[in-house]
Image 1 (tube, helix red, strand yellow):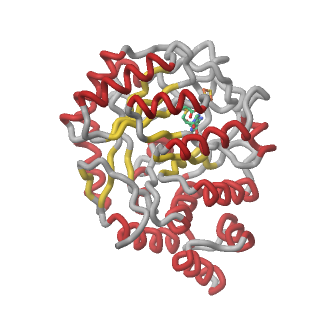
Image 2 (spheres, helix red, strand yellow):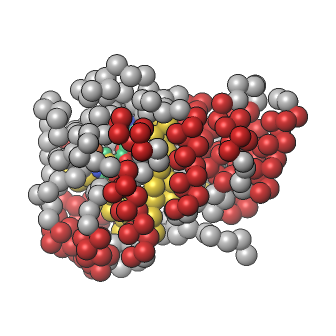
Image 3 (cartoon, rainbow, N blue to C red):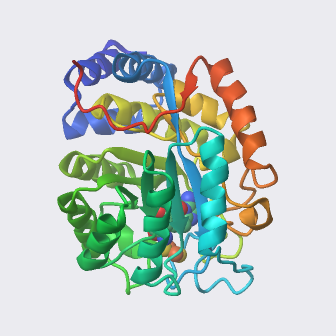
Length: 352
Ligand code: SAM
Ligand code: FES
């Protein structure tokens, strides 16, 4: 690697920021060893903040109905071939109870934007989980809502919210979504969530159609402005029943590079090594941890519905029971040199 590139990486590791030109140089660099050098610096920093800890979040995909039509997503309303399902409050509570026994202290309720779940229903589910598991964090990931709805969920006991911004470039956003959706509203949601007091997660897909180094640069700058607690990135993966069926998936290498860059830009952040990364490569999630990730989100949904929550092709871990998933991941994480902890896993903003 050239001394210039090595210097840029060293600067990023010590200052946690770079100029636009330097960030673009890292995003586009083709020299051998860039990813390795970035991962090495990122791992060093994650160990300073989080040691070898890997936090687990139990993901409950409770509905695959969605009113929206994002061009990339397998559960978009327009995909008439998707087999739809919804979990009842009792089923969701059963997933949490099983997860709790397995050591999960964070539950992530994720779903399409499904109007069947009115605010009252969501609040009822959230407060029931809160009553049964007062020592757990409850994360929602159910898309764009009004500020009043977010406030109601928060008052019911939800304390974290995941909403990827998807892309911070308005033109790019318009190429990924129909005109009924806007970057402006997505950003409004994220700032509302922060103001209400949620711990917020945002992020984007790597290699989404029409993504460029410039749009990635705006993603990094937007995240600096938002300062989220969690940043979720994973490769875009093609789904054959979407308008983007002929578009190639994002790559392992670019996702790992961005994970390391995010760790160096946001030393404090919770960075999941995502299921999508594990889907494009058999050791994707382990490599994601080595590149700077410190969170894994195993599936706690009932096995019967897992395949139906098909955002993209060949999603992994759709056949295993939650307990099997937990055991398998524990071993994988240990082999990679880290340790899963049973912990609510709050963000560590400072080193003291
Ligand atoms: N409806 C909620 C929302 O919009 O935030 C949560 C569910 S949505 C399916 C969760 C995330 O899946 C999206 O933010 C998107 O980044 C990701 N996703 C959707 N389609 C994908 C694909 N084809 N490949 C990779 N990730 C995808
Ligand atoms: Fe459901 Fe994008 S298709 S939010």
